[in-house]
Amino acid sequence: MTSFFLLLLFFLVGMCDVQGASDFRICAFNLQHFGESKSKKSDVMYTITRIISRCDVCLLQEVRDSKEKALPQLISQLNRYDKQHQYASVASERLGRSASYQEQYVFVYRTDTVTVTGQYQYPDDRPGDVDAFSREPFVVRFRAPKTAIKEFVLIPQHTTPTNTTKELDALYDVLQDVKRMWRTENVMLLGDFNADCGYLAKKNRKNVRLITEKNLVWLIPEKTDTTVRSSTSCTYDRIVVNGETFARAVVPSSAGPFNFQMEYRLTEEQALEVSDHYPVQVLLKNKAFSEKISKFLFLFVLGHLAFQMLTT
Ligand SMILES: *[C@@H]1O[C@H](CO)[C@@H](O)[C@H](O)[C@H]1NC(C)=O
Image 1: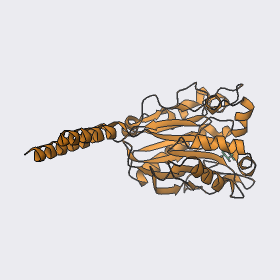
Image 2 (image 1 turned 90 degrees about the horizontal axis):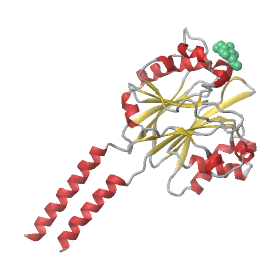
Image 3 (image 1 turned 30 degrees about the vertical axis):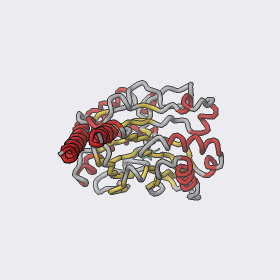
Image 4 (image 1 turned 180 degrees about the vertical axis):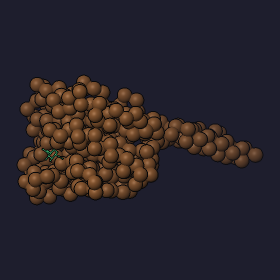
């Protein structure tokens, strides 16, 4: 009888492991001028905290925290709000062509599911290259052992609306450099690309290698609205993955905007106090199912052996 329960126990432990873990969420959120004044509005900070705590990794854009207080406040608020996880951040320098307008890229991530294994600030001027970006990508490599892909690189970009076509095309060069530097195909590009409506004319799309090259999958469906204002409907915010391995590691149809206004029952005015953009998100699959099955079988066999030992 004891051994029967032992067998049952092993079986249940194995099943839990197969079904237990939840999918891994990557987000990108243009916080529209996140700095001192937003950090002083407690309802706004609460909403931002709830949004970010849904993500294993969240790229923040338009962080304009010159006093360097708003971001630390956000991280400590996250850690108080969500006791299940620990949050940390890694931030770029202030980036921008003019001294008076600068932004930082910030990745907020859960330290219990993700580790930062590399970072690289794309240079302003490379030899033989014009200064392509207002805000050069701050490229970060992450290890996430529980995902099917295990390690991946994120290339963030918040384009300048008036230079969208050129900057998106230049991102293709960044992708090639990053692939060479870290010898990996597992790269995702994400952020407020301004890749729609008046900023990216249909006739220009054929000149953007990030769009025309095969091998790249644009995950946010065209015509989905990533803007909060009911008067606008544009797919500005995007998530793009490079290569088949990464594309296969993505949960099908999981990419899209997170409509926090509807989700948290805010008025348009309340939502606009948070940002004029929705975050966009995508889920990564868990560690290969087959790996779990073999672990389960191992436990099962172990259980069976224990059963035999106890009955002889
Ligand atoms: C657009 O790109 C050009 C050339 O790289 C640059 O000189 C110009 O300042 C950019 N415009 C903005 C608004 O950043």
